[in-house]
Length: 305
Image 1 (tube, rainbow, N blue to C red):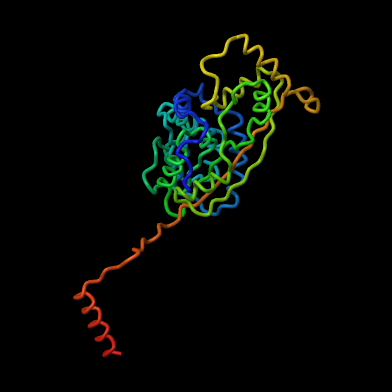
Image 2: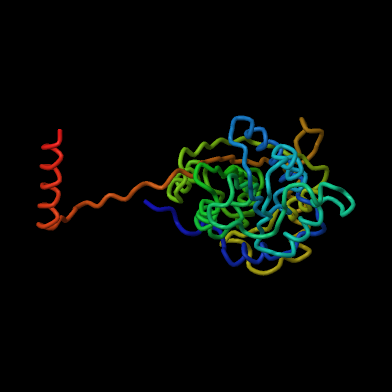
């Protein structure tokens, strides 16, 4: 059974609107950088050294992580792929060596754009899939960009993300604060459906603490918005925001010194692009003349043996 084209509770219009929203400055979200550093540890188990690799949405995925990957694959050319050319350009400006540094002119190439079909040996996509209104299409684009035996590395939010906030909203009788995130087993099925092989999935939970409700809300805005189809319609009033800030104090934990606590489930995955399988027809038709020629060749070979 095929997975739905869109995540069940994600509003594709709202997600696309957020994707078009520019990133402030050339700084990646802190949590994305942390997840990327943990995902890089998984590269220690992969022997393939890519000659070319693609960083999908590098500005949102993590510029510090990109620099670490450049050191790991120092001789590899890099593609900076983004749906927003301005963000790809900002990432290029932040990552490219200064004009007076020799590495800018003699080092591996760094270029903007989606790589051609079969051009790269690694696609690196940190914290992208959960925000995509069409994740299956995105998986297929990554598969297309990879060369045979190349590999995909990705991470995204899992279904236990914001568990405490979801429970708080439910107690208040409010709509969900975020759309439902996909389970890692479903991601594994979608990888196979997109043409990948040998998917390996794992997950971990990261707990973040915040000094104040205002700080918590600021961090969440940096990570995205509420794209749930059942979210509040229209803008909230200042009075409602006061209720929200007061309700968020329920997330305070004595064992955390009174700081507010939120859980994030992080899903990690990698998969290979296998060689295409030869298509075998269910039925084969052979003409009578073709069969006679095959029998004559077989007879001639027998006479020579």
